[in-house]
Image 1 (cartoon, rainbow, N blue to C red):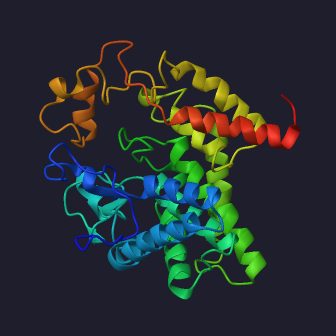
Image 2: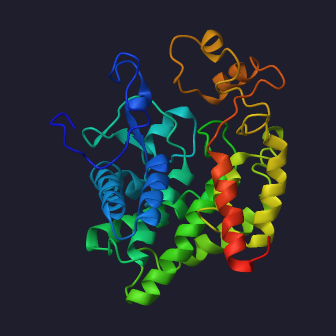
Length: 334
């Protein structure tokens, strides 16, 4: 914050070339990124400062959602707002990015059609409860119930959202897995701690049944609907195998094998024909390299890509390594 004291969440980038965030969207705190970071902090330091930082981060996100997003979910749950329409409705969805420095909502237009981001929050919040680092209180239970009922109301198992990469509107495996992982773990916490799930009586079962069925129809790929956006390999699916562990080992191995299609000579591309940060991206896109795109604008951007010039990233290889490490821990089979 401005008083130099931590506020809980992490921004996407420390600063721009001028030493501040002026003119860049990267000052924002993304739910997805923060929740994966929070899980790593807790998992690698469960009894120390890592766990404390994880709790602080997740608590700040919960405060943001309760303060600025809960009423939006209630409108959808009660059929008073339709958020499954064109671009103008995307801002009516629960926001998956906020101003971390202040904890305020960012009014700038953005594609908040990202069910995976909500799912990652629900999953890591429930992980902290499961490990008794941040037991559920009344407010946080209310929030979890709203999130579950919201994901049911929009039929998240068939929702055309932006996926892990916040782009093409489609049914993404990477958006179905995180809510499913959250549902399964939340059921275990509710059973262990003896509380009534704070949502409609059958919501958790409806979500688990439909999310599971939808996920199995798509994996080990990422998109099958709509057909024109079909994608049989996407690095985002690695997170379903680790850390979410929402697929069994056999399906996890199928995902790993499919990811060979996106491996490059340096790292992995997100998916083939991905135009984001492709070669000479700034020259092709313009002054704002963090610009967000509508579906129609994405079609124009994708035309800029030359075959084999996709950006290659370094964040996927560690997840692949972790998956195989977990396999070895269980089987001792090299």
